Length: 95
Image (cartoon, rainbow, N blue to C red; front, side, top):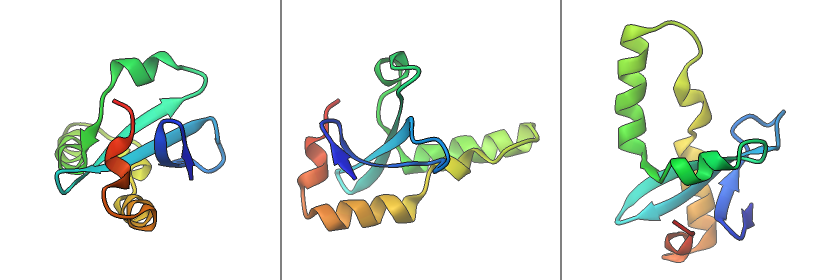
């Protein structure tokens, strides 16, 4: 899906108020979450490369128990959205 912020998917399909935006920047897939109930989250958190998400999740798993933070970040879905949009289209998403 796409809106004025860019390409997105619902990381938790049961809650469509949370959107995960995706883009490709310099060959790297980046993610940025937007929660309609917490709009300040968008301003406080920038785009995060997938590699950084993987590293943070590995550290989290070593030190804590609970939900897998990677459940929100779906690289396959992101790559499909970006591919469907066409070359260079996702880098225009707002910062």
